[in-house]
Image 1: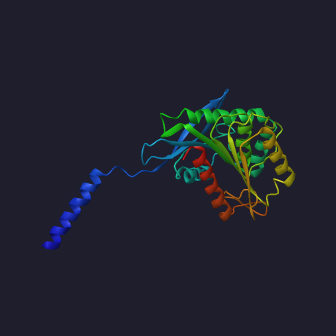
Image 2 (image 1 turned 45 degrees about the vertical axis):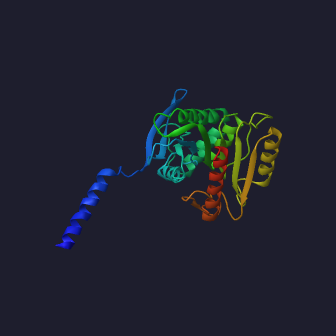
Image 3 (image 1 turned 135 degrees about the vertical axis):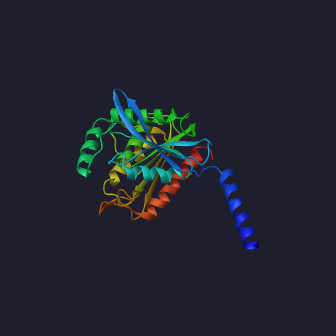
Length: 266
């Protein structure tokens, strides 16, 4: 009888907790759309809905494969550190390369038209800033980051004079046909590079450093030993030039979080 009594009390306690506790929070990945000119773009707004506390917003431009399930999963990882993340489409709604050849063709065309690339990045950034009523985002604390092609994209956004707290490039290209001019860079820049990345040769690094110095930028460049292109992407499995490096990826992500913590004022 005593054990039955205790069992009954236990059941009542569990029921009361179920009634009093809110539903378990979950990481949200909400499909969203926006326009730039006459073209529509689609992506995802990713955040943890554990509470309604306002948090910084980050625009994440994916690698050259664009908005994929892998990109959304990467955004969830980053959002877990306390951000609202927009997975930003740079190609247009429904334009999703099926393989590396198709992705390379898309990137090749857009690299030849940097004003359009910058305009698309700026439109996505404006969309993120307009989401205060749809997500727990502090629109006064906005940054951007990207991988590979997208690392170059966020650097082009910075070069355009965009006003945001900071940009972070993971193994992105550093060259440009529209270099920053003195006083035009209004955001801090962090570049996370694989020391063995053959796609980013020493001459390109030297040119970038000279550009940043001439522009009077607040910038930092970090090399990771043993890391090649794509080192921060778990899906990168194309040796020898494009391979995930867990050690470098973890260190680079930690540096990004520290960078944004400082830029967002703690």
